[in-house]
Length: 321
Image: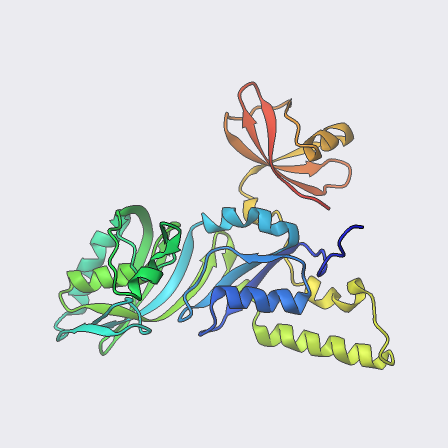
C-alpha cells in the first residue's frame, strides 16, 4: 500500500521578510506549517541577528534553490567601530576594544581595498563544514581550524552614514561572502576593530526587498481562513479554496533562472525530457549552456537542462507534477 503523503503538494517561492532572532531553518519550518506544505527549504541562511529577504522554496521549487544560493546578494549593514567580537557580530563576546580615531575620509579610503575581487577567510563561527561538522561546532569548544582564503567579489560597498561610532554601509556581493568577516576585516584596516550590530538583506538575484512578505501578513491570512471555515459551520474546505490567498503570494518556480535562455518542447520531446533522456535539439546554443525548458502547448515549466556536445539536450532538474 502506498504511503499517505504528509502535507500539500504546493510548488513555488515565497519571499519572506525574516525577523530578527529566529534561525533561517526555524523560519522555513514556520512557513512549511503555515502552508501545510509537504516540502520546504531556504536558499542561503541568514544569521539569527540578520533580517530581510529570505526566499523559501516549497515543493518542486526546492530543486532550483541552488541557483539562488549561488546568486549575488545585497545588504544594508550597521557596524560598531571600536570593538571586535569572537563572532564578528553583536551576538558574540567582546575580545578587543580600541579608541575610534577615524574620519569619514579614513573610512572611505579603507573601503577602496574591499571593492572588486578579494580573498576572504571565513569566520570560525560559520556553517562551513570540516570533517562533516560545521565550523561553529569547533569554535564553541575553543578549537581553531585552519581555513583557506576564498575568492569573492564585492560589486559595491558604499558609505551610508556615520553616527557616533556606528557606521552604515550598502554592500552588493557575490555568493560566499560573509558580511561579518568583511566588517571585521574593515575594522582591522581602520586599526580600531568593528563588528556587525544590524544586518538586513535587501536583494537576492533579481528579487527585491519590495517583494517581501512579513509574518504578520501571513498570519492574518491564516486567521481569515479560519474565520471563513467557521462560517461554513466548521466544514472543511478543500485545499485550493482554503489556501488560495496564501498560494497567490508564491512566485513561479522558474523565477530563479529567468536569466537562462528558454526552449519549448513538443509533446513527444516533453515526454523524453520527463523521462530524463538525452536527444539532439534544433537551435544555436553554446556548449554547457543551461536552458529553461517548457512544454510548448501550455507553456508549463518542465525544468532545467544543459546543452552538451552536438547540441544534445540533457535534463538536469525535472519538475514532477
